[in-house]
Image (tube, rainbow, N blue to C red; front, top):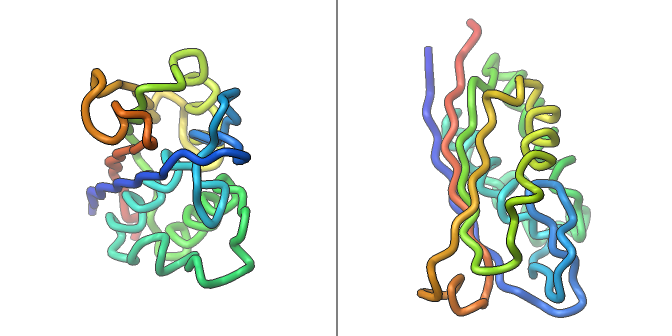
Amino acid sequence: MFRIGHGYDVHRFAKDRKCVVGGIEIPFEMGLLGHSDADVLLHAIMDALLGAAALGDIGKLFPDSDTAYAGADSLKLLAAVVQLLQKQEYRVENIDSTVVAQRPKLAAYILPMREKISSVCQIDIGRVSVKATTEEGLGFTGNMEGISAHAVCLLKKDA
C-alpha cells in the first residue's frame, strides 16, 4: 500500500536567529523565527510524512506550547517522525521538496541538505529531491519577509 503526503511551512525572518534550512546552517544576516530551530524545509517534509500516514502534523506531535521543543533541532524531530512511521510499518519511498526564498541563495547547500535528509529518513540520496526557487521579488518571500517550503512524499506500508 502506498500513501502520498503534502507538507507546507513558512517562517518569518528575524534578527539574532540562525538560518537553518534542511538541517544546514546557512550564513545569512537574518534567521528564521520559530519555537524550534524554525527549519522551514524539514517542517514541510515532516508534515508531508505525517500527512501521508494520517498521523496529524508537527504542531500536534511537537506543540509550541511544550517547552521541551524550544530551540529543538529539527533533524532530531524528523528522526522521531521516521521512528513513528516505522512503528506504523511505513517506510519512506521518496521525498520531493521546494524551498521558496529570495535570499539567501541556497544552491551551494542543496547536496548537504539532501545528504542529511536521506540519512535521517534512512533512504538513498537519489530518493530525496531538494529544489530552491525565488518568487522574483513577488509576495512575502520575494519581499524578504521570510521563507516557505513545500514537500511531497511517498510512503509504503510494509504490512
